[in-house]
Amino acid sequence: MTFLNRYIPPFKIFDAFSAFRVIAFFEGSSYLLLLFTMLLKYRFNMPEPNMVVGMAHGVLFIAYVILLLFAARQLRWKLGKMAFAFVLSLVPFGTFYGEGHVWNEE
Figure 1 (cartoon, rainbow, N blue to C red):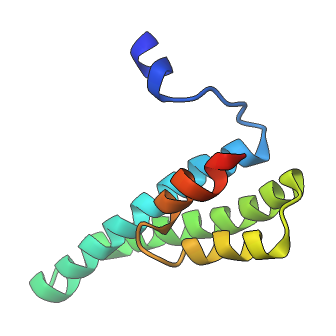
Figure 2: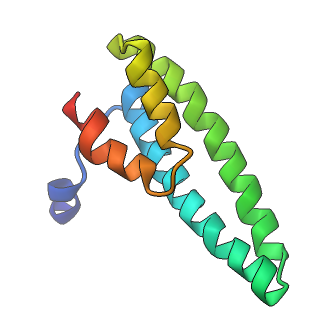
């Protein structure tokens, strides 16, 4: 367990910003997985994985936007930073960039 404590920072799950960071990671991961399942759908004619991952990605995206609003209110972000965090969710690897450069400053 001490191995995990070294690499995963402690957080309170009821903290909006911490929950936002967790959802941002999973939303970014689901986006990359969705790109892979799109390949399966259109190249190999396997639409089933895309339906499952697409639904999960949609739910995670909605959670991302809602938690972005709560986290921005909690941290008193200006509209520009909040808009930039939203745009990062639309770009592949964007949420990972945000974790490393944008909201890691908080």
